[in-house]
Structures are given as structure tokens and as C-alpha cells.
Length: 102
Image (cartoon, rainbow, N blue to C red):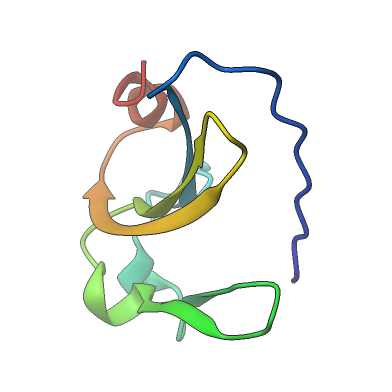
């Protein structure tokens, strides 16, 4: 799956940064599953030029978790965007993961 994202940044105060966390999360059904239960799950993040910025082997590197913050897109006041690798695992439901960002 490829995702393309465009954003229009309104005027932000100097020094302000918008952070957009990129998270992969397993939907919990009646059967609890972790990334180790998913065969060869991985995520690759590339820039617009096709250069790979990050590749995470979810099944192997984050097997004990149900969610992973792979990184964040950071948008500065002037509209400059950058990518920051994070690599933090989470357990819990969607709302629990969201609680880390509020």
C-alpha cells in the first residue's frame, strides 16, 4: 500500500512544529494478536524521490507489541517538512496508543 500526503500549513508561530506520528497498529479482535503472530509484517517509509528512510520488520523487531510508532513527520513554521525515526512499541487498544500523543 502506498500513501501520499499533501498538507497546507497555515501560518504557524515562529519555532512551532506540527508532529504527525506514523503508527502501525493491529486491530484487536476476539483473539489477541501481536506482530509476532503476523507472518513477515514490515513497513517501509520512502520520501517523494523513492529513497527509503526507514524499514521496520514488525514481526521480528516488535514481535511482542500490537502497535509501533515508526516515526513522525515534522512540519516547521515555514512549511519545511522532515522525517524523524522513532521505533517505539505499544500494547493496548487504539485509545491507549492515542493517549501517548495527547
